[in-house]
Image (cartoon, rainbow, N blue to C red; front, top):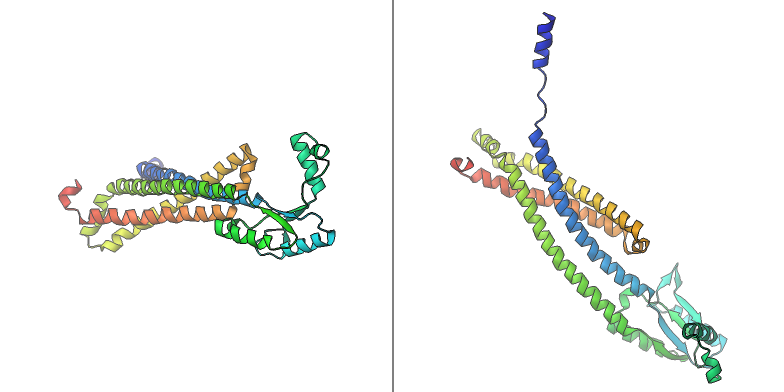
Length: 305
């Protein structure tokens, strides 16, 4: 009698979860995660290019040479005038201005050319100078012209040197690289949309008879679509989160290999990019599920087999 009861209890256990549905879930998440990771990598390259251009501009210096015979008092007055300019960048709330005397400039030049030119000329032809950094967003042709004109109006200023050709090359190269990655990113985004849409359609194909059964018992289209939309919205968002984690791990690996790359990444930009990937995954999941369920809701019965 005990053996019969034990046998009946064994037979009455809940059946195991459907392995095919688990595999289907894993396949959907992995596929969408891979697609979103590629898109996130492209977006990261666009942000990195912009950050690289900004970093280069932050390290450029404008040279303001002073007239010979400028006294120490006049030098201090010039520094105060430069510090008050709105276009001068700041480091730790202090104007990014450095004074280089003509003696220091001569010493640095002698080290570079490995020859004492002062002995040959019996004079030091160099000028005292202020090296100042300007705000990166002002490295545009029109803005630089205004800055040069404003600096040259200072009476003690002999000459202003701005590497305008280099700035133009930086701006042009950043624009070209950014445009390339934007176009490439657009192509990747289109591919991601098509891929996710195809994956969800294949996944819902296995549920087409369930959809029709619910329709036959009187369920409304909105009621039928709701669980599928929720399911794939969650899976899309989950895939976006996984893609963001993989992207973060990839960045950490790159920074271990090349430590200088750390200066090119901004945590705030990465957070925005991650939120974008999660939102995109969820939105594409909702959009594709809505289209796919409508297809099967409107499909004739004979076409379902």
